Each structure stands twice: as structure tokens, then as C-alpha cells.
Image (tube, rainbow, N blue to C red; front, side, top):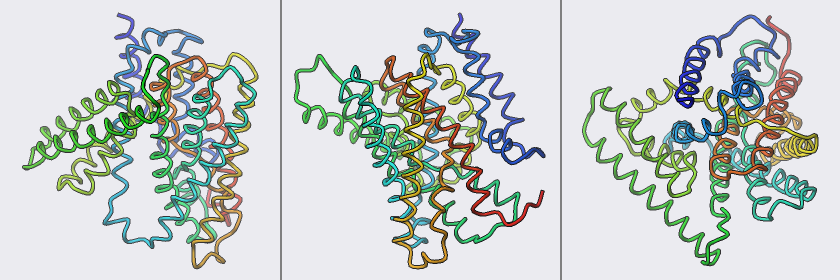
Amino acid sequence: MKIFLALLIIILVVFGGYHLTFRQFKIPLFARTFYLSGLEFILLGVLLGPLFFNVLDENSIGGLEPLMALLLAWVGMLFGFQFEISILRRFPILQLLAAIGEGLVTLVLVFAGIYLTFGLFPEIPKNMKIIYSLALGAGAACTAQTGLALVASAHSIVNKDSLNLLRYISSIGGAGALIMYGFVFLLHPEPTSSVSFLYRIAIEVGNTIVACIGLLILYTLFLTKWRRSEELHLIIIGMAVLSSGMASVLNLSPLLLNFLMGFWLVNLSLEKERIFKFLISVEKPVYLMILVFLGAYFKLDSAWPLILAVSYIVFRSVGKFSGWFLVLALKPDSKKHNPKLGLALIDQGGLPLAILLDLLLGFRGEFTLIVVSTAIVAIVFNDIIGIYFQKRLFVVKSNE
């Protein structure tokens, strides 16, 4: 009974609260960035979780895991819809490579730095250190567009070409990182398994390919003829439920699996505009529910995990700063861009939070909770300092 009460409370709070969140109130830019990203819903999840009111206790959270997988499937499909090949081809190939390369540079540096930091925790198995480091690196590669859009709307901007380039990087750069994140599921520990490591990888890759092909065939069959809006919405919801359940059964990432589905649909389906319109119509409630669940999982019972958060912030800042030089190296007009603009990419956004929830569902454990909790702290801090750097690097004069 408690699980239904918890679900009802979450639905009421999220669908009631999102009408107030994301609105352009006249408040300072610092507070507006925090407010428009919905991060206050993480605090709400903490209040509903075991640390305070215990509405979302361990049993309730476990019972709601299928809903979390569905939310991740929705986010993954929506993210995949950003990569329509016909649109991407309008941009120079070097610019696309620079955007993806910037994210991968950050991923590599954060992966190496966090893996070294995990040397302070000898009780963690080596393969789990790799998994955590790769997941945090993938989240670190992502950049939010929220702060850049707010700065552009609230101030007079210097060098709008650089701002447009950063917004392009923020929309594209997470793709390579998300693909790399999929490799963590190839390293999933199976202590009772007697098969070789390479054989397990082959099985996981095969399962992913078969799942993608099967889902794509189903989508194609359902969308071969024109459907009314109600029918189309039912198909998308049903397929999201099916794909998220399939990912859970096969121990795959619902986020990554549906990212691939979104990519295929936006490039192959004639109904892509109607599908995207439906997906985006509930994007905000889906995102806020993810924040609530992450808040419910939040756990910091010692000061030691904060070392991980500090390491994450430092290595990610270095990664973004270094990745920007790769962008400049691939841009023919690099001299007109400020070499310090990598610091304007520190704001992380929502995709890393979805990656964290995906990690929680795929790799349950006490230390996974600590890793995710410290990453949440680091992400919130990055969002705060990100807007500061963006204002320093772009603002000419305030319009407020």
C-alpha cells in the first residue's frame, strides 16, 4: 500500500510543481539557473527519502524501479532525436568531430582522475572502480544549454559566434560519452559465472544488437501506416514500456537502448515530427521525477566521499578547459574564439543525472549510492560555478 501512496505523492508533486518550475521569474540569474533546472526537486526527494520522512523507503524505491527504467527510456529516446543526420550534415564535419572530441577528452581525463582517486578505497573491486569511473566520466562529458541560453537572453553578449559554437557543443558533445557509457554494462560483475570475460562481452553485445533490431522491426510494423494521435501516443508509450522492460531483463541500459531507438526513428520514420512533439510534451515531468528519485537515493554518511566530489569537480574542469583546445585546433577560425571558453562548458545539465539513475538501477550496492550521491553534489556545484564563468566570459553589460 505504501508504494502506491509514494507514487501518488510523487505524481502530485511533480505534475503540480513543474507548472511553477522553468518559468522566467524576475530573480537573480544565479538563483534563476538553479530554479529553472529543477534542482530543488532533488531536495524534495531527499525529504521524501529514508533520511527524513521515509515515504520513499527501500521497499518503495525498489517497487518503483520499473517506473524509473521507463523514465530513462523516455529521456534516452528524446536525446536520440537530437541526432537527425540530415540536420547534422549542414554543419562542417570538423565542427561535429570537435564537439564529440571535446566530450571524449573530458571523459578520458575524468576517468583517469577518478580511477586514481578510488585508490583511497581498496575495498572496492577493480572492475567496479572502472565502472564507476567510466560512468562519472560519461556524465562529466555532458554540458547543459540552460545556462548559455539564460546568459544570452539576460545580457548583451560579446562574440555571439563563440556562444553559438558552445551551444552546438552542448547539444552534440554528450553523444560519444553516452555510447562509451554503454561499455559499463559489459563489465557487469558475475561472480557465479563460469564463462570467460570475452564470451560474456560477446553475449552482451549480441543481446544489445538483437534487442535493437527487434524493437526497430516492431516500430516499423506499427508505423507503416498513418495513425491517429491517440494511437500513435499509445504505440510510443507501449514501446517505451517494452524497451525499458527488455533492458532490465537483459541487464542493458534503458537509457542507451532507447537513445539508439530515438536515433533510428528520427532518421527512418516519417512520423518523426509527431513522435518528437509527443516526447517533448512530457519531458519536464519526466526529468523532475528523475530528480525526485535521485534525491530519495541520496546518502552521505561520512566526509570521505567528498574527496571524490572534489576530484570530480577538479578533473572535469581541467577536462573541459583542455577539450576546448581540441575544438580550437579543429576550427579554421580559431583565433576569434577566447581560449578560456572551455570554462563556460562546466554547467552539466540533466543528462548526467539520468546517467546516475541508470547506474543505480544497473549496479545496486552500498558504494554505488555513495558514488552517485557525491556526483550529485558535484553536479550541483558545477551548475552554480558554471553560470559564473559564462557571465564573466560573455557578458558585455546587463539588461536587467
